[in-house]
Image 1 (cartoon, protein in one colour):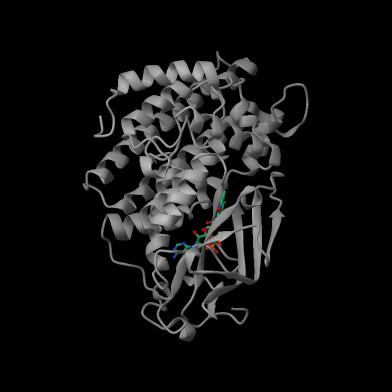
Image 2 (cartoon, rainbow, N blue to C red; image 1 turned 60 degrees about the vertical axis):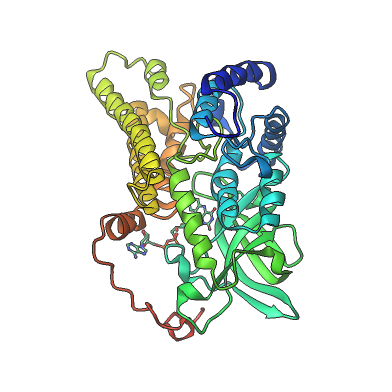
Length: 413
Ligand SMILES: Cc1cc2nc3c(=O)[nH]c(=O)nc-3n(C[C@H](O)[C@H](O)[C@H](O)COP(=O)(O)OP(=O)(O)OC[C@H]3O[C@@H](n4cnc5c(N)ncnc54)[C@H](O)[C@@H]3O)c2cc1C
């Protein structure tokens, strides 16, 4: 129980159970897997459902009360999550809006930004996304070349971002830009909270091999914002980005206290229902299939335990915050095993549109690498674990300590 709460977890859980039954629509079988994340209508629906949660007093369980949340502990959130299984919950808003963007604003934003944007997001009025990766590369995040220049007391932003998930449906984006080229790369950055429907911003959608158009690219042409758009301090953008990455790593493995409901609605987190696949394909008697499915289910279970363990170890100071990369890495491994297992069980039916209805398995397989790239690649996660959890020596970097305008780059930048 927290200081603010007079309700035990059990009491909260039973109140949530009754409220959910009364107010939230039941989830149809497989609805999460079929959710069209790239369709505008899904976002309108998510905002509407979020408003219901907010009005009902169940939004933002772990966000502070002064910013629109309930100010309760992680165990209350877990209780709500457990009760919400089987209901249509706006999981779309969990990542990046709540668990990454709002969490970063909570840690690093101004009082005004916290009061305005966290509450608006919890009410379902604002969706926030991440504008980090650039066409020149995403792994070397501190090397961004989108620039923000000071002009007449305002900031003028020019450049381009890419792979921004769901920017088409968003109101604001956390955008990392370079504000000083004369200092080493980590020192010349500033984080901006950019309104996305703003003069000078062009948003295009990018189609992936699996047909999804949830990614966007943005072009900034003399986008003008004031100091109130700066998150943290000018020149201290890397501190904000580091905090953002910390929240991202945890949320990629569903290890954040700021999500709500069962899961995060990222394509890689919505598991294939392997047991029903076995039933549908009448392979329950096959020893080979049982072994495959058993292996995948064990991976998922171990991942869930590992997420809890890392969450508590970081909270207790027994592991550094960078240990979130362990959850991120494990999530990708689970995803790969599940996707491969589904394809092995479905067999050739996964690549044809017929009465067997298994084409979804093949389409998911096309997106198999998503889990190893999104949220920073698994190679980068291994680097972080090696260097900043296990304290191995750091990899060599030719640009360390060198003013950014003297770092050798290709001509386009
Ligand atoms: C599902 C998904 C969602 C995403 N959502 C967003 C989003 O909302 N906002 C956003 O800004 N970006 C987003 N991204 C982009 C993502 O952050 C980048 O794709 C990722 O950081 C890798 O950058 P890159 O694709 O430019 O690859 P690069 O950085 O060009 O890397 C290419 C390859 O080199 C490897 N590599 C690079 N440097 C090293 C190194 N030092 N050590 C070892 N290996 C290295 C990488 O692991 C990778 O395999 C998303 C990507 C995906 C797949």
